[in-house]
View 1 (tube, rainbow, N blue to C red):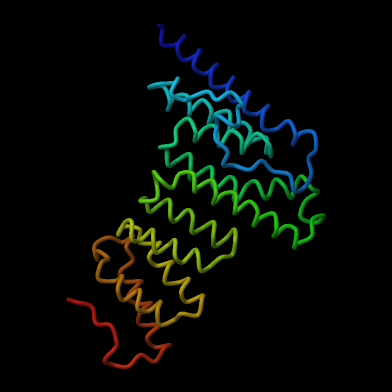
View 2: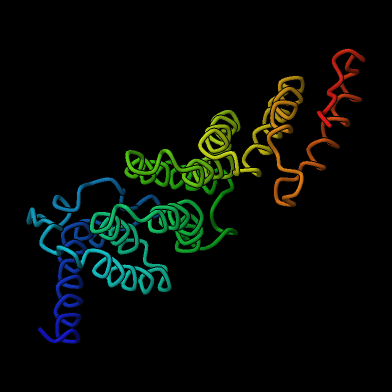
Length: 259
């Protein structure tokens, strides 16, 4: 088959499936939309389309098909389409669940973009009470975390996945405890997740666990390569010294790095 013709057929197939999913998921929402209306990610793609179609039919063209669906998603994102965007996120990740890019960016859209769209659709920040704005942000953060949970079996060993989760827990939910734990998991997945390691300590401090934060940096510092500026070994050592002063750490407990 001519490659151009094959690509055209594939794109039409994906767009047709996207249209089927959109109709199945959005009919009740489009009939009755309000401030609290949102499409909840997490349903299987087969359930969403109502046809039980299998992405296996795409064979080796799955990534290409997912890219076509992502383009359609991007168009919905530009329109700030509250209904189509979550549906297409589910479609894209169902077609190609191995792509970290789709999962991470999809979670960011749900956690950070959609709340702003919902508030704007309700008249803007001036018209929506702060308490309700906070509720919307929390709802979307929870949806984003559930969306990320769909990738857990294939991506939970990935430090970036845990860092993404931590950021949503911190900024979206205001759950500092959960965010601190997720940043620690990110560091444990990859010793090159330097920022995650430092943020874990920072959040421990925010939780009032100042000695635990110092102890974590003491553990962290020996593993930071001195010749890698991104590792921030000098910054970490300076912070240890600052916190030891604040805590009044005894001379015998002061951290002494190996030469």
